[in-house]
Image (cartoon, rainbow, N blue to C red; front, side):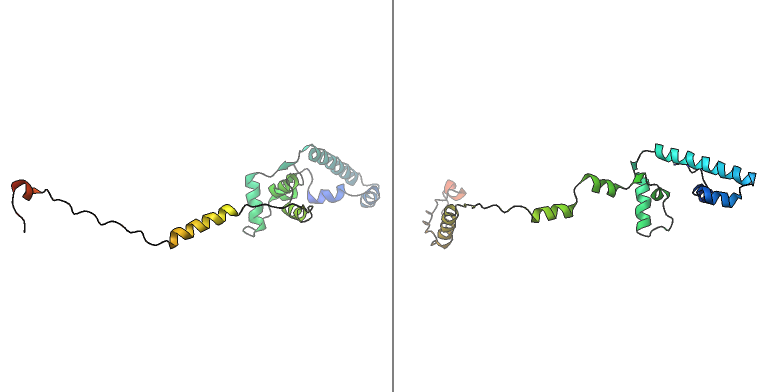
Length: 161
């Protein structure tokens, strides 16, 4: 957005005809000429502003805005004054339902009357089987048969003690 008017000229541009007549006195040709130039510049700026399409702020602009909002910088980003530039958050709120609205909607939903049937018999059988396994007596093992050693002594016929 190009700025055609200074802050002082903006005051003149917003004057109604009665205020303009009082300021110019109705006879001062230089003041009348200046007032006409300012009004023409104001119309030119309004046309330029109308031609600008709304857009989302860029990443750099968003960083500047967030720094400004969290007091990391004192300089106000210039894009905040442009109403044609909207923030990422504004766009998100516009395009997505808010969390609060979703929470409110879930509280006001209809009450369904239905029963949930869960078969607990298989769970009960599994627990009983596990208890039986845990609490069972220790199994009795058969003692292993003594092995016949066939080491080097047996091969050479040496008697061991």
